[in-house]
Length: 233
Length: 271
Image: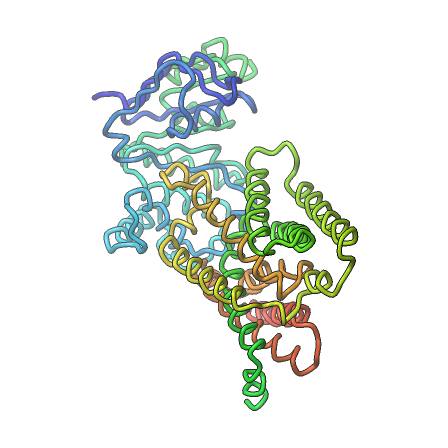
């Protein structure tokens, strides 16, 4: 199969200041890639590049035609404003289907069906009429993943999804993401600090500190110099 | 009923009612988005800019509306943009702009015409300020805002809830933000004549805040705040007629009372 995303010597950044320098990586269908790095190491900038919101200042970033048509599902970091937003779960999930449509003002039957399926997949059907701000952190993340699944069946990009969750909710979220990857064959790209839990899940690791420190199989990361330093060994 | 018939026999009150209902509807709808995006203070900042622009226009002898609408729109752009790439924090910027615009308006006025009743009516509003031209402009504006809300309702929800996600799914976020900024600016300039520079921002934030006490869905909040805003406006106008109080201030107090009522209801419901 052709890779979904190929980066060759890519630089990304704003106003003559590159946050990411000389990055080369390949994301294949079915991958579970985890991006690690300290704060301010260019992770969020890289995500913007992968989403196509930021054009590379150098190098080439190729996105497969298939992926461009099917769309990428995105789970941004939660903002403070969202946590007390008056909206029902159904309204939030439905808004994920917006990428698939033109300028029609209302949702069609098939979009509503898609939202329903996606809520079932994440086991939040009974929360449909609940208010988003009254849910627990873990439930809110499920709602946002359901929304992202409405936008794609191919690839999910998650930006620090475990921030603010309690330990049991974190484990549940990891299980959910792994199932989406293994059973539904959705390609996962996740930014996370929680490197120890990630190693057992992801098949590829990217460690960046503006430049690429490590890119390769998760099993090799523990043995690499960058991995040892980051894991504190 | 008799009082309402009596009120409707004055042409200036009919104009005020028509224009006011439409402006408060627009302000409430735009307000939901602004409040949820944490831009509540923008209404306040813009109304002060509008005061400054009006005073300068009156001093120079230009048509006030044609000066203040572009100036306030520019200010709205600038303030909304600040939150995106901020060197100055946006709350500080708004405070700075409000005071400067107010000061500029006062200095220009006292140098030329002096502090007349005109200026005082800009500050605290006047029921007599709605001209025929204002009513027509309010009507056009409210039709635009209503059409925008109905046709782009889902996109506006997505942008208000999560700008990053909306951007990633290919919605033209900047375009819609600009549209909201322009419409907010026009709403504030129009509403300011009647409500006054000091009070107009309440028309933007109160209905949304009140509706959010009780309603749990975005649609519920939008519909409720539109209805609330119009109802509060009408009650306020009638009260101001009966008690001979300034219209703007009466409307704000009715809105406050409504907020209290809704908070109480929310408290009782939760028990």
